[in-house]
Length: 303
Image (cartoon, rainbow, N blue to C red):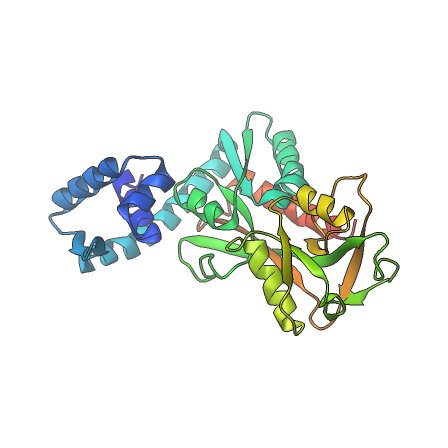
């Protein structure tokens, strides 16, 4: 097994600060600092050094991190081989994903895993995309479903194995009396003059909508902010503006709203991917969950 203190160093490197690592690990900053000092003492090297008001990883820390990525992947492979030989998967599987994935994709995967491995406890954790990879790194989750954003680790990151799952088209959400409501499809630019209901700045969906509108040649006029699909649907249903919603999102009934598909090249969409710790793909429960996600992804967007 890998020394847990090396995992702590990996999280410090990912978060950039001791405080950030402590938050990700649910530790106190003093606990993180103590573990890293003890690791440095046992190895006989310096791992962190002051840099202004923060810290900087030393050359020795970077060597250790590079080797730790290799060791972690090999250890995950060993665990997978042992599970296959023992004909018994892990006692638990933790799935994490953003809100619409947690509602539309992960329950099916959890049900399939539980049916295949009755003794395996399956937990679903709703989390923002960036948090999902923190959960994988800190081993508080085993499989993540996330929307691809610039803030996620690159596909070549040696700590993770990331694979495309589905493209989730964005629909224009309008009031049922809106002039575009009766159309079979529209160009996004046709809503350029509308009042817009956007997610809060800094959140992934806000950036996605603004980027899509920019590509269509306009900047959306933010009339209201809504972080939840139900809130956005209520505002659109009240005639207060229009919004972009993913096809994957299941909206509540009872609002006077209409989804209108977007056309164009390319039509705006979210790119959804899966992520696991590198080396863990062969673990039976993880492999079963990934196969179940592939199965449900084939029809859920167009359902």
